[in-house]
Amino acid sequence: MPTTPDLSTAAWRKSSHSNNNGGNCVEVADNLPGIVPVRDSKNPDGPVLIFTDNSWSTFIASLKKEARM
Image (cartoon, rainbow, N blue to C red; front, side, top):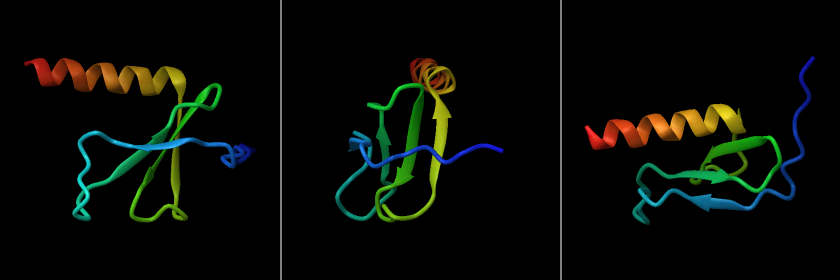
């Protein structure tokens, strides 16, 4: 059974594409070894998606590739 990672030391940062007007706000914490948690900044106590480092890197590379097209 998977265990919930300890996120108490997560250093959350808001996406550079988020705005301060209550729009789509995503925060990530990339200071935890092996995982990248992602959450909605408007609901910081809500659910968190956990990605492996590798899957997060693949996701970001895919977004960057798509943006160049």
